[in-house]
Length: 352
Ligand SMILES: Cc1cc2nc3c(=O)[nH]c(=O)nc-3n(C[C@H](O)[C@H](O)[C@H](O)COP(=O)(O)OP(=O)(O)OC[C@H]3O[C@@H](n4cnc5c(N)ncnc54)[C@H](O)[C@@H]3O)c2cc1C
Image (cartoon, rainbow, N blue to C red; front, side, top):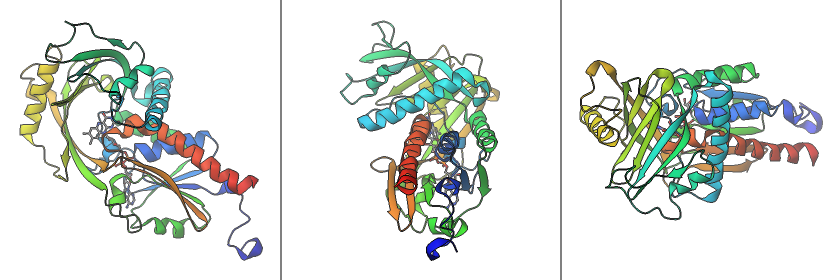
């Protein structure tokens, strides 16, 4: 017991590890940002970087940075911060698995005020395509540079980075956030970055969360330099993966479908759509031996992701989950937002 009869109350705030539930891109990006700011961090998760379970979305992402449409200015800024960090990694840390690529986006309808056109405020080399530079069935097109992240490199990079900065990983499944309060009685800040896990955690049970199945084709090719994106009647992307020497072809979103089996009708349709988007990259019938398939569950949430803080007795609970198809695009911006929330708690506890 510490002073005034409170258990361990004499442990200084900065020495109480911040506990993160979840070691996907959100938990790990947040851990990295907290550690770089001098906090001590422990991640607790059933699946850790390098694992390959269908429910562990971060292993399966494309993962391109693309400006999301239909989001608030605050969320645009979070994406912009994320882009800044990813760009720096692409330029300075080749082992991070982040690369800069050219991009071409084709737009079916005249872009509205809340379309993804806001990306032009941060994307290098952004320009409107001239008529004749994009297929005539589209309203307009944009060219720019963006960043793509290869999760097969980035997640192991993050594991090493976090460990080298003094962070700890504990492999453990919990049934409720409360389990963590018992395991870490000295900690005051807990971050719930459990993705789809937030649907079933006993003291969260967020019914807005739902699984959204994705299935991609990996096509091995040396033509892996340009990201193509079309989001309208058809949701189709070609995401370069230079370090794995190929491209990812997608996409599809299937709500409440948890099947781990590859659906070959979907795979064939994705190849056909990618071929019509960029025939110079994807032939009509790519050789079977150049193809492999990826299936993962996106942790989606009705109304969008959750990012907020709650004071529950003497603990601060921060929630960061429900990123659906955009966890990598938001990752480091969310990490920085959570650092600010933890700093506020630090100020309340240390200064006041
Ligand atoms: C096919 C596909 C393509 C995608 N393409 C893109 C893209 O191009 N760009 C992009 O930005 N995003 C993309 N995404 C989305 C991206 O993968 C997700 O948004 C992101 O990975 C979510 O990260 P997360 O950390 O929230 O969740 P996850 O990666 O699912 O991690 C959740 C963590 O919580 C842990 N956990 C959950 N419950 C418990 C529990 N009860 N006890 C202990 N641990 C628990 C898990 O073990 C895991 O460590 C794609 C996803 C898919 C499937």
